[in-house]
Image (cartoon, rainbow, N blue to C red):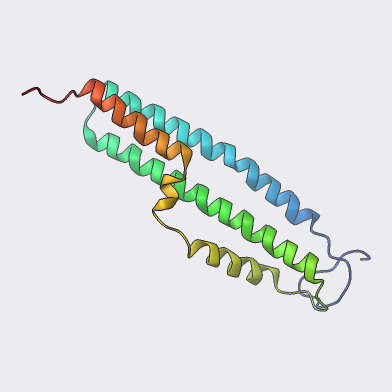
Length: 146
């Protein structure tokens, strides 16, 4: 079909990324779902502290928040990898269309290899969660005098 080329054809010509860009847009919209999940976990954790529920439940909320941060980081890395691969192909305009899946995987793995615990300190919602939880504990579980 004119104006289209598949990644397996190896032919030259115009490559349409509209389908990929549409999928990326949907993935970016998923970010709000992650944010909502983090807000819900925070709310539940704060309620657990206020109702003086056992610590293991609070620990579970902390683990859930960590999972959201990891999911958020992976989503961001995947989106960046796809965008980078698209930009690479658009800028280079290679004679033979590269294996886009492989290119995205390579870029994603390179981003993932740079992960560190510092990423948690850079996540605003996670930092806010930890600070608010600490403050609530001070209110509900004051240190004994003396």
